[in-house]
Image 1 (cartoon, protein in one colour):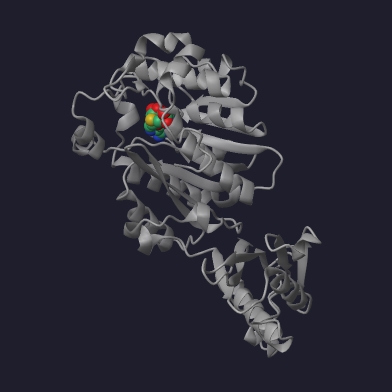
Image 2: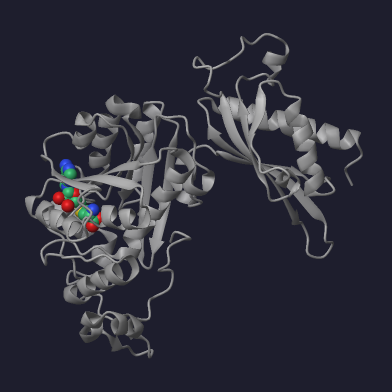
Amino acid sequence: MHPRNPYNKPPDFTELARRYPPLRPYVFINHTGSSTINFKSLPAQKCLTEALFRLDYGLSLTLPDDRLCPPVPNRLNYVLWLQDIVKFTCGSATVRGLDIGTGASAIYPLLACSIEHTWNFVATDIDERSVQFAKQNVSQNSMDNRIFVERVQADGPILQPLHTSLMNFDFTMCNPPFYSSAEDVSRSAEFKEFGPNAVCSGAEVEMITPGGETSFVARIFSESLQLRTKCRWYTSMLGKMSSIPDLVSLFREHSVDNYVITEFVQGQTRRWAIGWSFQDARVPDTFARVSNPTLRNIMPSRNTLHHAFPGARSANILASALRNVLVLISGVTVTSSATPAIYDHSSTILVHARSNTWSRAARRGKLQETVCADQDLPVLRCSVECRQHSSSYTSGDIACELLFTWVEGKDRLIFESFTSHVSHKITSSLKEFGDVK
Ligand code: SAH
């Protein structure tokens, strides 16, 4: 579950029903004495989604009986993860997203627009019935000027609106049909878990696509190879962990190294999401990597690097050494620092390097200055956070570390060599001035 997801514990259904009376008939007390609803009943599920929409987002929702009933907590995880990525990598005042396969609820654009007032969406679907409901849901929430619902053709480009739009997009999102066939559905873990009588109002078009979700996302990827920076982040949810290795192989085959993987766990349901970008803005590891051992070999490389200074007396001394080292590196500026908070061990500074002057080759004069073709573009932007924590409860020893996060740049080696160079210089300066224990 995403740490900002407010549905991290089961709701108090009695209280919900008090605040949203249409839910009352579905609430009962179970054998453990807690109030609940029957999650296998479609009307109960629909009413819960409507209640959460109304009470938590001020939105009204009309859902048909013959299409998926989206659970809000699960869908919110994806929106919150996108919010993290957008916050770190998109500078634009207005954020433009494409929701592929929005469904009858148009749940992603509605939730996202109610949380983020600068976001706008194009939302597509191939299913005429879902498109009609999606339009109605957008209208009844007066979001027509922010969410444009478009019907697209199943055999046409999936990213159709990007191919035709004059404007660039910040992200695409998608909850694709997961399965390749009816047999694939019945083999799925969820089908087995809940049994054939489990409530799933999903229509075939919502659940099944030729080749399953891997082929669907691979199609998005191959279209993105033409569109490239027309959109900052191409992303998709995935229902099967086994789809991830195939997609990462595709990325690697096409030298796309700027990709992200995340995992959403909501109750018994586990989902994944994947994203990739042709731009140079990088995402911190917290949003780009997961610690699932099965996925270890296909995780993107780390964008967040820790360098420990076990001997440094305090974070203030480390911060000051950092500042002294940075001013001596030519071409490097500290573009944002809440000075004097630089002396505060929790402070983060943003470093901007116009050229690589620190690598061994550059220092020997062997390297043609790797200034970006566009003189205003940095070869590297990274943030550096100075941290201090007690390394042992008993001894009370202080451990200090620098946390480097790659923010922007094409070349990972430049980022990594910068962190090593700075750390090495700091270690020498701490020794020289006797600021070590
Ligand atoms: N976003 C909704 C619905 C997801 S179900 C939710 O999360 O609840 C998948 C949706 O993708 C269905 O509505 C289906 O009609 C749509 N779809 C299938 N193929 C598509 C395509 N090529 N382009 C756009 N939408 C498609």
